[in-house]
Image 1: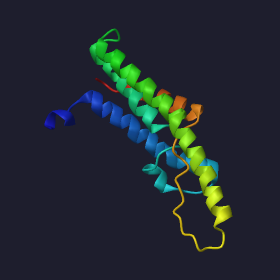
Image 2: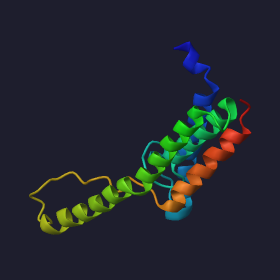
Image 3: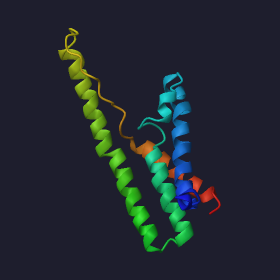
Image 4: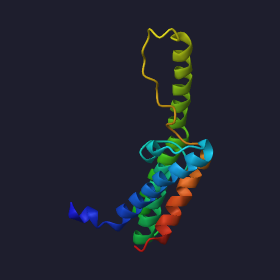
Length: 145
């Protein structure tokens, strides 16, 4: 377990994730003109923390193991899958949640039906994914491995 706490590749990826999550608060303030500290722990939004984490992981693995190493190829494939999923499948799920919430609002406006609203901000726009990937690349390039 103590080895994980000293794993610089893992720590670099987690640092990129934490920075991305932290940046969501000021980006939300700029966009919505209000502080929303819930953004520190919620999915979706600018920048994509998933993209930041996996791109930092791939770059850090490449820097340590070499960019021609099989481990780097695995990390890159993993990064592409995660980024595709966050911009595609998860974003579509968020859009479906939005439609279902509108249906709930319209059909059950009388107040007798108490259904919990679905989380709509699940995925990312391509710009959010790109920004997260760029952040991960910058963090992994700046950290001394």
